[in-house]
Image (cartoon, protein in one colour):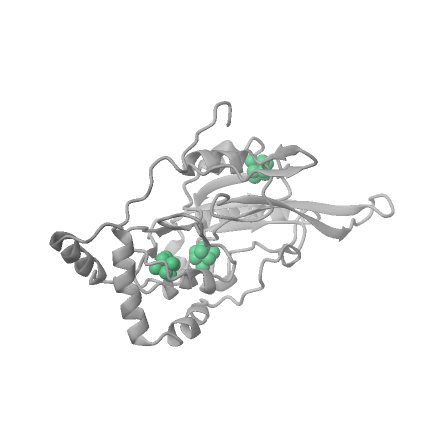
Length: 292
Ligand code: SF4
Ligand code: SF4
Ligand code: SF4
């Protein structure tokens, strides 16, 4: 890093002293009734990953290339700094009658940030680099981020990922831009107001009770979310947590309580220094032809 000029040093100190808006982590779910949300119906999903490819295109992330027996593929297994949404496949146990004996139920699950109504990541962030907006999404402001990664510890869904190998690393996660909804060829993803989608989810359960669990995941979990899931298989089988319908601010409190004040101050200063580094251009951003 080059030596700091006086002007840059003032900018550093000023950045470290940025006012931190009060975290809006305890709002009741009803506040977000009219906010933007997405409903994912796992029983309609065909696992085509058009949504994930669109996400890669919109967010300009590079493919996560793997290789088996010399064959290269882009089939990520989990969220990462490059895969902000991922399609996973789960064995749901023996299929119910009238399926053939020994048949099993399988289901896809599209995982990404849940856009919690009371986000633990927002509560944990000491510099308000993550915020829940009135419109629904939980958004990330990289210019504020000091790289402390408390958000990663706090998130009950293990969502935020970090650019560990980047010279100017960021936290990465879905920003609920809706590109995936437009890309889905079978209507497994729909968007609208949170209230409208919850009503639609319950209509589907009522119409086809044998197709769905009587549970809209995200309606109440952890105070509710803006990403809602309908499924035939209990989502705990995919590793999604059973959360009480109360806001999980408690996830963040032990983390923040364990941090001495001087450490937080030093982190703010070093983080502001870190922001002076310019991100290298063109690292991520390949947009490939022929993708949906
Ligand atoms: S899922 Fe995790 S990262 Fe996303 S809003 Fe909730 S707490 Fe934050
Ligand atoms: S890494 Fe730290 S500063 Fe950055 S968003 Fe997460 S909690 Fe906030
Ligand atoms: S585009 Fe739709 S059907 Fe294809 S994997 Fe994504 S959610 Fe499932």
